[in-house]
Length: 412
Image 1 (cartoon, rainbow, N blue to C red):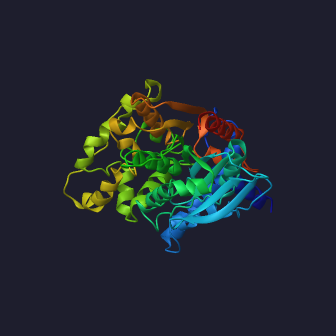
Image 2 (tube, rainbow, N blue to C red; image 1 turned 90 degrees about the vertical axis):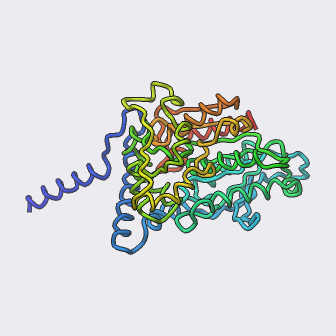
Image 3 (tube, rainbow, N blue to C red; image 1 turned 180 degrees about the horizontal axis):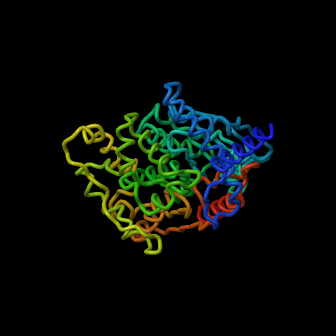
């Protein structure tokens, strides 16, 4: 009996060590809270892998549980009026200030795009609902949160197309007047994959001939901006870091483009590009666009381009055309496209595979003459902004939120 007890203790200790304890850098505050939080994500990911292996449900279908678990029904409260609407056939959650009496002053507006790797997430998740309400009350703003379609059911460019349709519809003079929005004070913002969509739609709008209404500012929160080089220093340094290990980010990218597993394997090896895409490597040359302090022990080398023949290239060549599309990889545009973009806020985190994407974009925007506020969190990790609610509330999440909203208040 005593032997069974010792065995149980050893088993539980090993289980705890494997699923909870991780070698997280000392610089990250509330490390044990992050370990506990990530243990849930890791367990769900392992379950998703097993489910897909057994043919029960695909990986992202299982991981979507995170979205469901955080889901809320957006309802009006004392200060905020909430409605669920469709703009040009796309679902949106609309948040407006609830004011007594007549209101004639035109308001700011924020079009917010949620994260989740284009495969997960929803504006109806509790953290996004709370963030929208905070923007409404502190900015006296109309907040439009877009429910774009998700991969793998809807591959690129469908999620992007949904966002662009909403923006174009909302920017009509009659629609802006309906919601008392000042056409000169509209922001686009998003986190992670939402930051990708925000950057892409901002670029596209600036190039639209005859477009009269434009974004005043763009806010990109730890954005994912390129799929050309998945071996940047931050991808290598943080490949096993919570809550977005390299494998998961690569899976998000591949699922965004196609359900063909050949692309995932090629992207994991960083051999997913074509000879035609080689001309774009100059836009992701981190040895040029990153400060030397972030180069670490890595030496720059362009991603591998396989030969034009062979089964592997045949399998990935069509998605590779999408990978080079600036609507998917906004970092890949020439400097001329960047020059006309609105003032930008870029948030990056040290312990994030996407750190270098955001820093390279901020560097290139500045060089093109765009006014940029780059806020880098030395102790930050990917997704931190989402964790503002007990039991997974982090002090850094509250700081990020306050700084982001303050920037909007001062610049929008």
